[in-house]
Image (cartoon, rainbow over all chains, first blue to last red; front, side):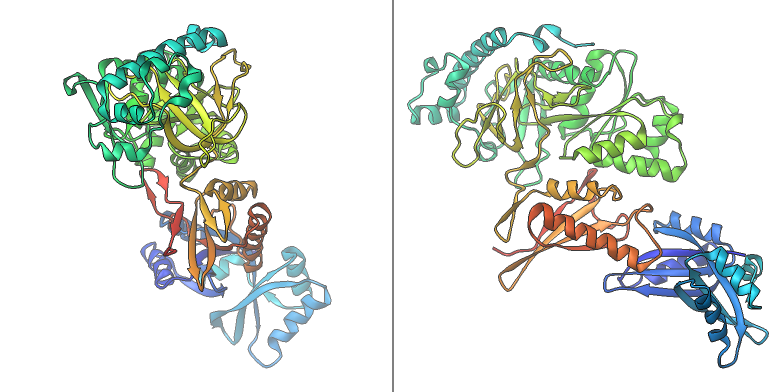
Length: 143
Length: 433
């Protein structure tokens, strides 16, 4: 169920983000979700792509520092309170969230969210037990 | 235990002193008669060649500074007619005008001898394949090691510097046993090796002869571990002869100096007094066999100390400690003396950082600011901001603890710090004084 997310270290310099996307484009990689965490000096770009291994290789070849992290993708009802229900499950089970971000698109009438939690296995079990739809990685890579 | 020249490398102190006394007296006579620059300096101090009978008289002799070589550029300090000179090299010095050194046929022979001793110290023999990745050309590194290796009868791979991928390919395909290059180049080879997916087991390399720039004990550990080799420190400067002025043996407890050719002294760089054995100060060399460019009491600007006791390897040749900094590299930041090598040690003690770093010093409102740029490495990288900020804070804290000054720390992308000739540019001083 765990989805492979690609993280890239970027200095806060103009043009670096464009370089990353250029490298991915050249490798024929499709991006389906992304987020940037940044500080004054550097940022971490997190990406969900159709082929994580290929993306990691392409970026490394172009000299970027890249790592691969396991994250969870869930589909929540696209209505007020939809996300809140899912997060309540994690809170009830005392599972901390390190970060989260939303997908660019959505499937049917559900909104897609990427979560990085403390104990991924436990998080997936709790979410599924409460009827939250956790997306299989294969389905995520096809989005 | 193998020696290249057991007679001189394991000579008793008394015998060595006699050899040095004779050779020094002869050298001073020759210099006095053949080099007007030295003659005038000595006459000004009221010193005659007959005053120099033993190494105890060294203190009567004038120092030679880099500036003396510049002032007499190009050939003013040569002691023989130019027709006797068979080779010219220039100093690799990065500061100021380049200086020229010249070798007679006998000097090339002396150099090969010194370098052969150094390579044997690292375990080289006539069966070894030695990959020489120091630059060939005007820089003494490549050809110096080359002649020493040929003297031993080793198989030389004269690949010269640069092109890390090709270095690794050749290292693997040709079965290199000994690698000679700058330590920072060795480290980039290790990185490239891992990137190319070449395992150290595929290589036949046993030892590395690394020099040409200061490096720390931790950098040695990193190279030794990641490459599975013995990493030996070698020292040299073109003014004295080139690489081979000193080299470690496998005991790694100081670099043996072929003192039947080069007499070392340690002095206080400010008072210029000779310091007793064991003291740390500026390393000074007098050459006592060189013909083309013999130098008296040459100020290296390198910080080191000397140990005269017999080494576990059996050699009695005096040992200099690994150079810990340069008197002219020394930065004064907010009144504190800082050597870039101290900062390197801090970074390496973190155990996580490959040692590519750069110090940027600037002055704002009469206050010095030190910023340390540290290149990101795969092992250091985390996808959480908090973790990366922790690393920055940890380095900042360690620097404060070691140097007693505060510094800004910034993580930068790999390969953003400029390298030239395999040497990383460590310091950018933007202060206008």
